[in-house]
Image (cartoon, rainbow, N blue to C red; front, side, top):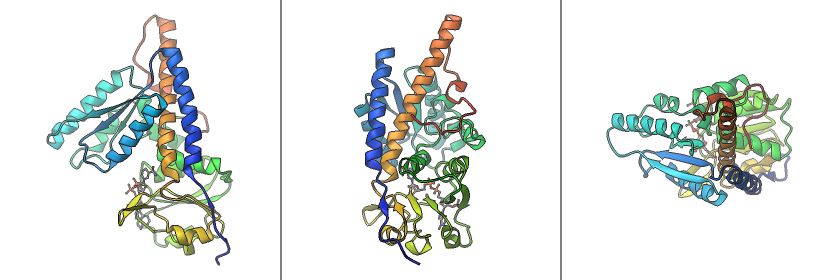
Length: 321
Ligand code: NDP
């Protein structure tokens, strides 16, 4: 039964600007302490990919926050040559102390294998949480870098005052970069979580009992109002281009009539993702600087950044600011 007169709109921009202000202050403090800005390397294989728009937005946000954002382009070549060059570039960036964080353009071009590429990123610089070590730390409920998009979905729930503990949550999508990390984070915060995917037999039956719905399927309009429990909180992570317009995975017009709160697309999770990625970068830079200073004091030399520095176990909150 449809009872809601219209859902509360969960907008990302105001939260993102608060996070960005915090990042800019942290960057200024970092520069004052170390005499240089923290560096972010964005590694791309070809500038034509649609994700280039997203990456250029990140570089612009870096400039605005005082972060040294750099584009590292892998030259054209066969997939084998590009994969080797990509892994070699990641090795160089891992060794470069002025680079605190690394992100790699995804999806990788056809023919380049994901595994050798993610393995080649230093987990301490893996600010988007794609390295197996960080994925494992999240699975164990320990502190590490988490994917910024899943973190953004959680941050939206936190900042909107949504009760997660004990809630029935349904995550639609089980990708390693969005759906599964969101499911692990919700579980860690005591929600009872169901993960749905393309083989789920009856998606509406799961959605109808959910207090919290996170949708990351890449299917425009997949979730409609009639599938939702009245009053549910709906976080739409999807970004799809339909007839030249950006839309989410949720049919916004029908869903807003039933939901208690809902993120718009665009303007919901997206802006938060970028801001949180920069927050992760600052955290990486601070940890690496602290590790280097500690090592210098104790041994009189500055060693390479230690992986453990960015992945301290046994805390209950995801990597944030
Ligand atoms: P993937 O394609 O990797 O994963 C999609 C998931 O959705 C899969 O698990 C798939 O199931 C599931 N799925 C597909 N169709 C259905 C269906 N009909 N019913 C139920 N589940 C379905 O996508 P990503 O996880 O990378 O991205 C998901 C969405 O989030 C995309 O729209 C993407 O653009 C967006 N995105 C947004 C970001 C942001 O900042 N807001 C950042 C990153 C992504 P199966 O596993 O069975 O194939």
